[in-house]
Image 1: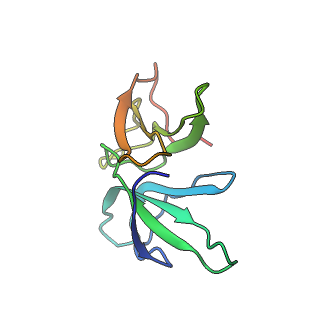
Image 2 (image 1 turned 45 degrees about the horizontal axis):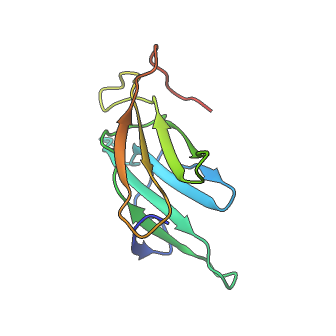
Image 3 (image 1 turned 60 degrees about the vertical axis):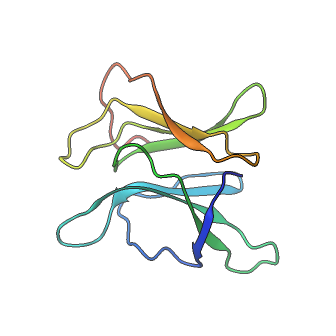
Amino acid sequence: MCATQQISETIHLARKTIVFFDFLQMFALGGRDGGDAYNFLSSVLRFEPAANGGLGDWLSAAPMAFKRYDVAAHVVTHSNGEQFLYAVGGRDASSTPLASGERLGPLSGSGLASWTSIANMAQTRRGLP
């Protein structure tokens, strides 16, 4: 898994746009906090289930290059077996829909995973499933 830092058993920052899971991996990507003056987020958290059936932990991962909310995300396994977390579209802090995307990975191995830009989509997209 990518290098992480344990932060707690709960997410301490309310998020309006979160989630993504793929089998045993679950991520909280970007979003907006729940305050009156929204703070837009680029942070990424990964949930690590507890082996003994306990609550598990949310671990911080490398932040995205851009603050995004209403973002679509998916873990893709490439033909060589490496897994990458892709984040595409969404909206920026001014609510402008985005055509850009980025990926985090590879998600396994001992090295630090980092985000890199991928090709832009032909059209802006937000709120993708």
